[in-house]
Amino acid sequence: MLRFFKSSLPAQLLALLILVLALRLPLLWLGLPVTAAELRALLVGERLHDGAMPYRDLFDGTAPLAAAVFAVLDAVVARPVWLYRLFALFLLLAQAFRLNMVLNRYDVHPERGYVVALTYLLIGSVSTDLDTLSPLLLGHTFVVFSLSALLPTSREGYDNRRLFRAGFLIGLGALCYLPLSLFVIVGLFAVVIFAANSFRSSLLLLCGFFFPYALVATFFFYIGAMPGFVQFHLQPGLTDLIASGLPAGLQLRLLIVPGLVLLLGLLRSLGTSLGLVFQVKFRQMMLVWLLVAMATAAVEQGAAPGVLVLLLPPLAYFGLFLWQRYQHAWLLELGLLLILNAAVVLRYRAHVPRLEAILQMPAESRFGLHPDPRYASIRNQTLLILGQDDRAYFHNRPATPYLDWTLSKVDFDHLNEYAAVVRIAQRIGTTPPDYLLDQVAIVPRLQQLLPGLFAPYEPTGMPGLYRRQEKQ
Image 1 (tube, one colour):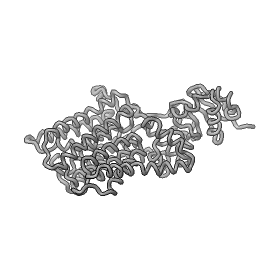
Image 2 (cartoon, rainbow, N blue to C red):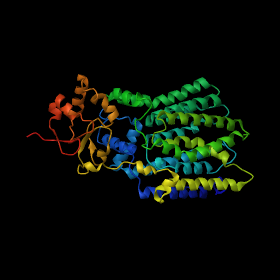
Image 3 (tube, one colour):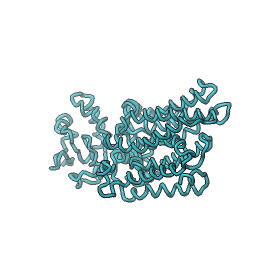
Image 4 (cartoon, rainbow, N blue to C red):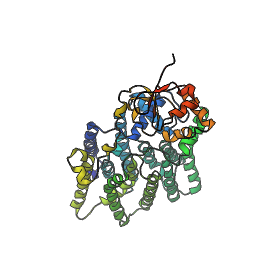
């Protein structure tokens, strides 16, 4: 099978597509529960589609470009979970084939074909974490597409437009997921090792990176959302505040197969002598890429949804050295089959009796979100949740700017301050929700401070749930 994919004919591309779809689509057809990140994305997209402006009418840490994409998808279909899954698959395919095309076009390795895309997609199918759309997966697509613009097209060095485009694409990636801005380091390193005039080229790259941020900041300035943009996107410490929901131990065990392939590829690449200076420099750049990817993953302590995608480009590149010619070719074929079987076993372990217990790896689907049965009777209502548990939003709509509780506590944790009480009155008074779900027991305090706004809410008999009564 490995020899088959070392050719660049259209038949190999078609076979690769069929293989990947056969590996991934059955589980999507069987259904995966909505994750915490997906639910937040659905809510953000719905609110923006209804006319809310991010950082002004919606307090959430989702990066602006990712939020805009969620709004566009919601405009296509309401609460489009299935569209999220298909779009995530499309993004992963786009990343794999783009990286494969760039490595083939620039001859970064003596052997060509679709082995890069094959490795990328097989390892990317080990975990269902990449079956769900996340800001990281979306932003990483721009980073992968920036790679070709970081490589010189001639011995004279760079074309200015290409360097600006590389920085621009990395900037778009950061507008989807802020920690991806660290990939500017990869761009600067590429400039140092490839460009003749490193200082001017570095400035071009940085200008390209900051240009999309300048455009977005100007837009938010004119709509009055600039303070929120700074507070909710730039200040939270390079984090979007949403974790994958998987236990750290499970995440580490899911990285065993990718880590082993990456380690073997690294060891073999260091023992391989490359003939061209460009190939040696490219290997150095991919080592820096790997370090930056690990630093990006560490920003959220490896808990960001879709964090595995950060390792796929360097893993696919160093995998080329793992699959290069060997005197015992059957060992390479066996290794590839083992990786394919590992992907199938890990991906479908929930559907094989007792396999999860044998592997001591519960399926990712067991950590998905399901509607809270206590509030199943509340549907299609506007709701404000005061607390961390967002499950009541499954069948209801947020109606106030207070979506992310971590950010909302800037006001609700300071009820002894007059300014915080005024902000709550201004932000909720225009569109009071039908229901309040009080998970932190502060509604009585709010009724004392703002009786005109919160006095109409009366307990419903369900835990923490208040319903707004219309004035007679």
